[in-house]
Image (tube, rainbow, N blue to C red; front, top):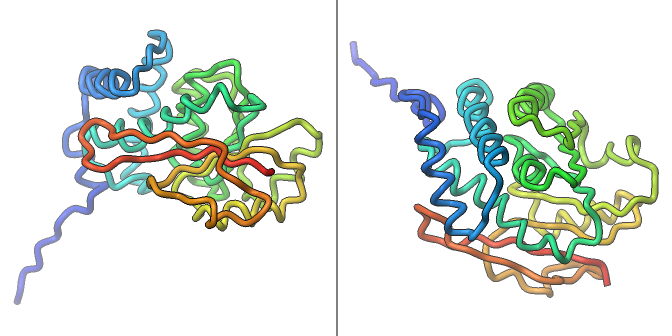
Length: 232
């Protein structure tokens, strides 16, 4: 009888040694230094709490395949916080994060900008429940979790307040623009996370690239990029 080795899956390996608070803080310090961000102590503590909650729930929900604090902080939180570079160009402080998953990019941005209003859209009930725990752990009072898809969102918001939709690892940019156009809302801006090199000819009219930011984050060998899209 042959013995088949049962190797742990990546998200199971992630719990082999739970990182300490010092491990998380060290990873965040390297990230904030790279992005030249000076966040208050309470924000840093809230980000650590989010990371710890993600780590705790990951074996059950498979929120990420990343297995080290450095990887989680750099690729998930770093990508998200890169969006702060676009803040001066945003025409609203109301963000709607589509398919938030582990809470990215919406929750780190909400923690860093408590004056913003952030709604996290997550259609999977199990992940929406995790998000409730993550928001509670961070103490962010400016976040609402909606267990809905993008298509269902207009049923919850019918006012004309400007909104900036965010999407990370959910849609290709063409899909994002098309889905937002189908929503029927008077849209103005959207933030999309992806790789550098996006060109305007990939966007359906009337969308255009207003600006973009990119960075090589700690422990990574490739740049990441965020694009601020607007309707001409």
